[in-house]
Length: 615
Image (cartoon, rainbow, N blue to C red; front, side, top):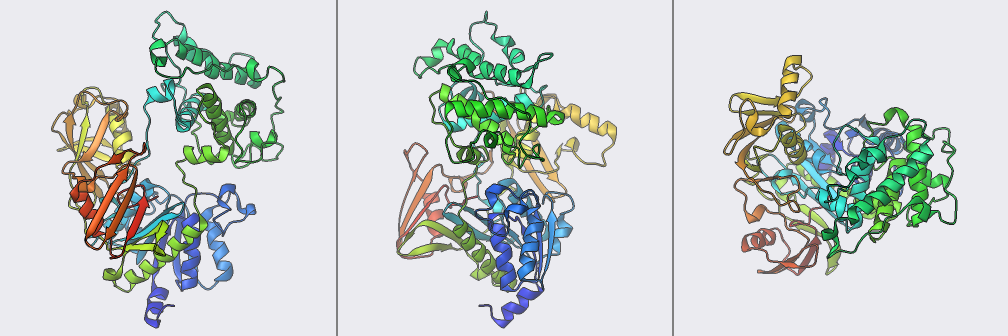
């Protein structure tokens, strides 16, 4: 129960919430019931059917509507005396700049991706507004506080990036369900419905130079004059699951130590039955809407947690491909895979399962495949409720000026001695952080073989989460974005994108220092370039490695799961990687972990990373 002093501060506070999903719904409700009167809410998403089991402010009739606006309306029904301003928009939009952030007393994050979290972190630093960060995954969760110059910022700790897989593994030798799902969404879906001018690694090429496999890509995917969607779908099926596997089998060296895949053709799947026919509709007046169009539903496969048979997968593959061609005709050539596009997700699941059957890999349900395709760990409503309550408690401490009382709190899956929540002291800013301390980063790259476009897309936008980059070397501006650029400058910068690093007007070579700026984020960082000839294709598939120039093992994220046992002054730590091999942890990392444990009793922490941080 809030004291009169706390209640007075709460009622005067102006709060920004970012995210109206699992945590966001609980958080908005908790803020309203606690007494907050002035709340702004930003979320770009619309409501999906899959949200309804845990995002309790939404109902079935809200599917397809703005999360922010529906959440506001739902809360105002039981707290009509408060002000909630909902923004159905991306927090990275230029409207939400530093001046916008300065009007708030505290910012509360309920986001589900690292990129947006980084953006909000930088705006809060630039605006001088405290940030309460949070996350949950399954039974695990955490809440922490970030205050400029007084605590570490969100990016002081190394964040796990989405795992990438070598193209050769995805194309030639898949061994896990995720390999097949990545193949289906990033290669097959992109080749069929995306930009066909982009190069593709979809087709396997044999070592036999006399093979006709080089023309297979054209044969499989170009629709012939007068060809129906149904016959085209069948030809694609035989091409990717039959002929392409046949080509892969010609590379005998590949299969000396691996199980050989089995080609799959339409005639085998339907040897005793006819293929399903398509009527071109979804039995729905809005059948071309991405939220309602469903090949699986037409085929009677309504349970998303059921694993389809090979024939079911073939049925969905053919039906979904034909429906996509019929209902998205105007978008063919520009479609981008979206896990929340029901028809696209069904197509990817079916394609991945068919490929899995060829390589003897376990097939996945639509529910499981969506989690893998979207890097989703399915949420638990109770965890979200606990986390939202902790966010509000930390926000009140900040508003009262009690930073010393603030804590990072972890929600544990396996409580020890009836302890579910583990508090830890806030950490000071790290001198090695490239965001709040502007430490120089090191980029290892082959400067003679890498184009500027690759650095911009994979490093600047990808790993550094820079929204509107401006890249310069000394006084020379190499690349810039913005609506106010002159046409000739846009042309010049686009030309620079296609040049190799050492061929730019200001050549980027070994030892070069690049300045990266984003005026919207009021963010600047520096990259020192180190030329490197050879990269490990398995471990470094981007052929570039970004690291802290002055990085230490203390800042390094630990792979696999981490177990920490602290009893008074004695610390026992071990880490286990994805293959259950024990990894040694140096004493610096041990002390960093030990420092965060306040309790003097025995505590077990289980999680994915050094700080059990989850997303």
